[in-house]
Image (cartoon, rainbow, N blue to C red; front, side):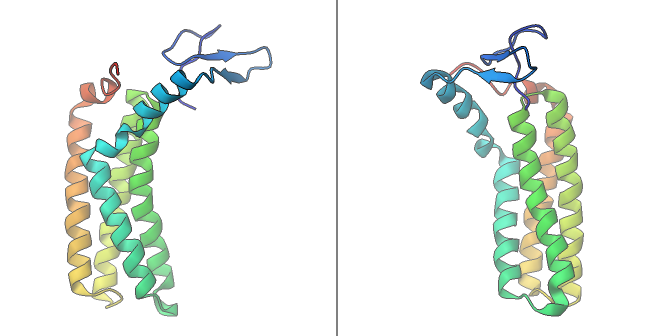
Amino acid sequence: MGLNCVGKWGRGRHSVRWNDSARCDFDESPSHQFQYLRSVFRYQSLEAWKRAHAAAVLVLRQTDVASRPRTWSVFDQLRRAVVSVEANIVEGYALGSPRLYQRHVRIALGSAAEAECLARLAGVLEYLPESVVKEVETLLGNTMRTLHGLLRQPHQIGSRRGPG
């Protein structure tokens, strides 16, 4: 996990202690849990996550409706790629390290480009309606622009968890 620990390896903002068997013991007081969870779930305010989430929901719904045996391989890869975009934004955010966050944003960017390519392929092969393909391309294009913006502003990544 990306939590900072208290003990031999340094001091962090989360009350986590390393015990003798090299395991982390978490401070489970209700106020500590609330503070930590509140900071982790702030990813939902990120514009990149909102756009990635909308794309994922659209792709998952539309590929379920249009699923036929010949579409399975393309749809399976498209689903994985679009879910990866959203998941990497959330995972990078939850880890709490600017460097790890940037790494996951880059992975999300690659997955968004892959999903956009696969959506276009599904449209050319007439596996998905053209209107759905255009909507997916728009959502993923906006997601990629937002992710590029996050990569250009690394100072904002580390400062997202302020007091309160």
